[in-house]
Length: 185
Image (cartoon, rainbow, N blue to C red; front, top):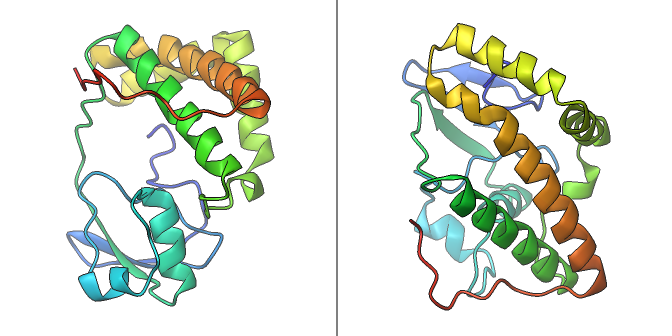
């Protein structure tokens, strides 16, 4: 991360060597789900989680049920999101369509709208101006010399355009992404 932190939320943590011990509060839940996320069966069984799980909602619901202690391992994760910008764009569209669809059905519990409106406004402004994204990419490249930083600008702009389109589409007529013939690569 450009900030050098694993989350932008102000969360107390105790350094346990190979991991951070964190105690979360409802409404102050970082994205710690998905890849490598493990939860005790007993804690999961307390929740009425249905057929479709959303990692961030699951963590929010666990915290709301009193399961507040989590371990955040200190290891980088290589997230293979897709081969190329076309697949990245398709996955971003799937993500925003699914979010808008399930949100409209009342199936999402994470309080996204209570988040940082200033952060969203800053992201939009950076995407419109482009130059701040270039500066971020240069800063990131200086910290970690990796050609992947060349993707920072196009990935941010694609995300902005696709999310804006998906948000507008979802406000008019929310729909779940068609998964026929869906492949990850």
